[in-house]
Length: 150
Image (cartoon, rainbow, N blue to C red; front, top):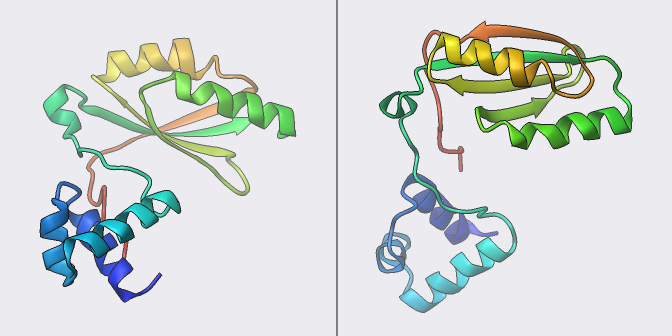
């Protein structure tokens, strides 16, 4: 990856809706070489995809919690079962496995506190191998969806 690839990535990371023509102009390439580079970055897995960034509050999702999960046991199968169950809960918008205790950090969104309580009681507490869940409510999003430092 060279300087031009990094410029392409920075431009697309800032605005994924750029046309190839606009992108080529911004990085100082003609259309064909720019298109080849973008395609190569996609095929190599550097560019994972393109998406719209949505405002949760505008969609009625006004409640956000960080949920720390401690598993009963941390065997290969227990971890695999837990991780396989996470994609089934659409309100989990991010999940990270951690070193140490707790074992996982989940970012969960919901409409409001009663909706979160129902999700907690019916789905989160029923995840395989869960020993303990500790929720911390998000007061304010300070930094989110930040572009990577390229």
